[in-house]
Image (cartoon, rainbow, N blue to C red; front, side):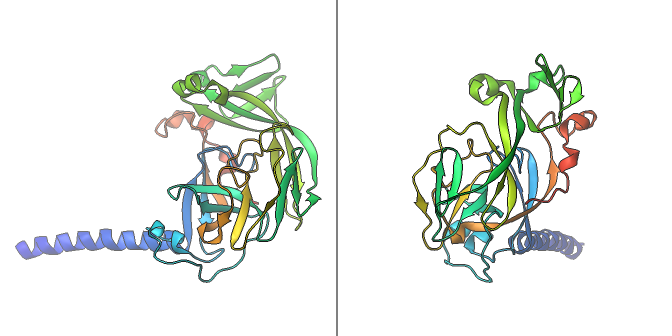
Length: 292
């Protein structure tokens, strides 16, 4: 009997040990899940999106593995260069406990500058076209049952209606605790923005949103990206802490991987166990969405 108990204990240990080892190898070399906690990449990524990141896309550094902040080595192996326009997860060079997701805008030697709300790369203004309305709605959860209404617009669950018809523009909706909205009144509300299609120098087209062309980061100095560093920006140009100010240039080693697709998305409308609310909580149309 004691021998049998010992074997059972060993089997349990082996199961847990090898299961954890497989998970670590999978997350380190293949795919790692992340969730989006901020709106800096709206409209490409919404708060509540859960993404998979390709760990093999640009090779591996010490940050690709557990305990990467221990600085066991420097450099990358099996390395390939990212392309301008890639959406990338990287380790914050200012605070290594944080992972950020942004769009790559500048590589070593590039000069980046914002002038009057317009992005300039190497002295050339980046084209943006097709302006269209965009709504960013951050609502207190106390409104989730009754909805939010104005003269022409109504918001309920995951949907916006204008003049009693589904909105013909893009938007994102998120629900916050009432305490948060009372404490940070400026962060909650219905905010009107403009969505543009931006075309980067290598032909990559992607969407951005602008609140205006006169915000904090709409006029900057010229940044010249140093060797072995990158320059990142959020697609939500007026609400993104990125290389223009908060994090500066990002070392090449800090890159974790390329965002592949959204595997799950919700708007914090209600707890996961409230199955009856899934229609208003889940962003079904974003499940499986690839990122460009």
